[in-house]
Length: 293
Image (tube, rainbow, N blue to C red):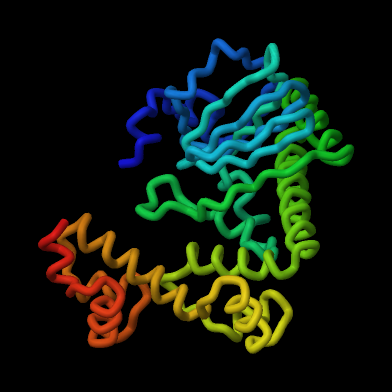
């Protein structure tokens, strides 16, 4: 358990914010400095998009600090532990709350380079934490229009308002994903490393290939490997192997699962190779690792 989780005292449940047949809510509110203490953190059962209308300070997410100014936006997944450090007299903001099931069909059709929409399929009862990559953006006139329209539809509930809210939510998510991809393209070398690290962190259990990674980015695998090695000092496959070994070690220490089961569950397909790689990396056997937990 992390220090953030030890400090957590508020957990917001979806039943308090929306009906099960339409898991969506948008509210504009004013948050005051006295309402937040950095030692009191918040977590929730649902996804949340925060849109800052006015005010300044910091949004604290999983211990990291992100500056707040008018127009700032944050997309928070359920396991994020968050709070505010408000430096102005208050924060005028919108909270857009939803469950991905609301737009499940649309999410299956949407794609982007950083798998923005894939992580939306994460389940609250899953044993795995989704990618910790945060989606932080600055709004524009188009986003402001969508948010204001959402608020009006939600409050006035005209005919077919639920269908329109679904469409608006999908539109907003598409724009946020495009903004993230635009930044990635403008910082091409850094974005390639970020993309690969993101894919390894999120899909280390799967059969990640250099060909597939290169295809997703649009470059051949030799160029992909060269850029990554120049930026990080190690190969993509080295990073993937280390990630799998570290996750295996964590499982060995944390659980009583069979070591061979853990080996295959983290993405290795050869038990003998796993033992050799584990010993070379940690300088002890998986069995000794368990004894030392």
